[in-house]
Amino acid sequence: MPAGKVRNRIKYRSAVHSWLMTGVILVLLMVVIGGITRLTQSGLSMVRWEPITGAIPPLTAEQWQHEFEEYQGSPEFKAYNYHFTLNDFKQIYFWEYLHRLVGRVVGLVFLFPAIFFWIKDVFDVRMRKQVLLIFLGGLFQGVLGWYMVKSGLVDKPHVSHYRLAAHLSTALALAGYIYWVALEWKPLKKVPSKAINRATIVLLSLLSIQIVFGAFVAGLKAGKMFNTFPKMGLTWFPSDLNTAFELSGGFAIFENGIVVQFIHRYLAYLIVFGVIWLWWGIKKYAFKLLPLGNFLLVMVGVQFLLGVLTLIWAIPVSLGVLHQLGAVIVFLTLITLLKRTS
Image 1: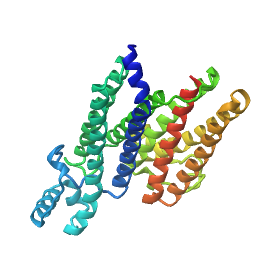
Image 2 (image 1 turned 90 degrees about the horizontal axis):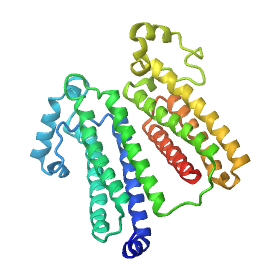
Image 3 (image 1 turned 30 degrees about the vertical axis):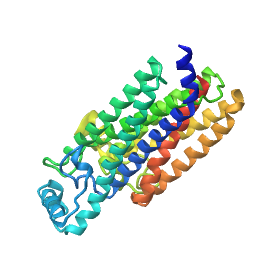
Image 4 (image 1 turned 180 degrees about the vertical axis):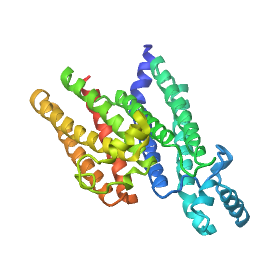
């Protein structure tokens, strides 16, 4: 690398790291607001996708009335919200508008500093590829978000749970990738350990599957079923499982709410035991990582408790959002552990 570029990289190291971490926080803020939007049934309030002009909300009574009339033609209004007044509509419009607005802010926060650092020749070839990948990932996330919303504006007033899972998963993947790149600009102290690294990869994979099934639970409203713990109703294995597989075959694991909640529950047990096993391995073979291991262990315990409370109280908005945020924190903690042991 040329000496000038090395100097620039050193000079702007902290600034690039802060910029990337700001991007991570904003993407996660979008995830949280997206969770509130879903839990408050606000996601179908905006029936058009206007990437540029949509940044300006309705400002006059006439504009609000026009937006409300557009919504009145949607399946959701006709099926569920036919009693809504204009004020009711404004309340659900707020969350979807805020979700889209933050998405635009994320794009601007990423774009302009990227151009500055690019012009200043701070990035090497590898980092330029990473920046382009992040930018394209953000664009894809926006398009996917509208693709998800559109599924609930055609015939049925529900978004596809497959598209919901894809939208959430790609958002977390994008946040995770930006975070991984950010760690390269402010490296952590490495504690190489192949065993811990491999175990972390396994747990990260399980958690990723669990997050997808969490999205399925949300999309199928499966969290409203069997609001009991630790059993599902009166039994550990609900009797309806057999019926679900008889009706849907193998697709029941993706499309039947009872089966999806069952899988989500038991994956949680597996992840908790996996983290305990990982923590024990850190304590025994990579003691310098124990503070991070302790944090992971505590966070998984908190996340499990949040999941239980969210379930037995039938998905209140506050707990639902905290449960989603807890998954994100565990996800980023595992990425940190993966980076430190590689």
